[in-house]
Amino acid sequence: MDWSALSVSLRLAASTCLILIPIAIWLGRALAYARFRGKGLCEALIALPLVLPPTVLGFYLLLSFGRDAPVGSLWANLTGSGLNFTFTGILLASLIANLPFAVQPIQRAFEHVPHNLREAAWCSGLSPWQTLLRIELPLVWPGIMSAAALTFAHTLGEFGVILMVGGAIDGETRTLAIAIYDRVQAFDEQGAAQMSALLLVSFITLGLVYGLAGRRRWARG
Figure 1 (cartoon, helix red, strand yellow):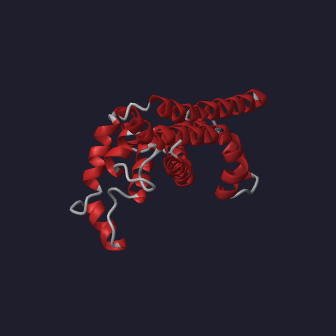
Figure 2 (figure 1 turned 30 degrees about the vertical axis):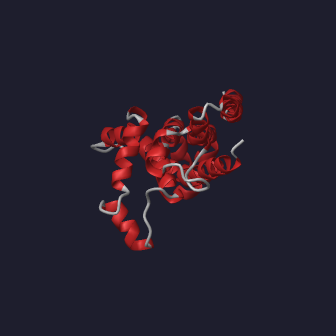
Figure 3 (figure 1 turned 135 degrees about the vertical axis):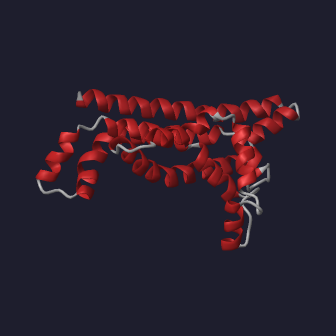
């Protein structure tokens, strides 16, 4: 077992979830309730990582994070360091690659919240923030759980985007998926099999989360 790669993968997956889920709640709620020109384009941009090959997405992010590009140049001016081949760079790439996995389940959950329920909460004296915290979030919690599970599992298994942006620097950007690939290239099938079996935890996590979310929906119905 490559414990260093496992540590990087878990740190990346946890950081991606902690940062992205609050953003996804805001975006998912806005897209579920708002009606504006260009909404379809916004949804298409969010879904873009689903249809782009990971290496293609990683290539464009690699270019965008370079010191000659606006994003990379701004980051270098603010911090004095680059984004490519750093943990910060693969974290930012992971946030972009996982955006649809986080936003779409939450958006669908908000779309199923009856609008008259929100209006009733406002008529009862609750502010918009109180309505969100006390009424809406408990109702969309299964969607949030699904989004978190999908994001965590996808981050653990992500290969192309991370390899393009971060390379394979031990202890910094070398994740478990990259370590498995390296073991296969070295004809160490036993080591690759052991590490691959660990990623089955992603499947178990998804099963548990979807099971809990389904039970909550069944209990409400």
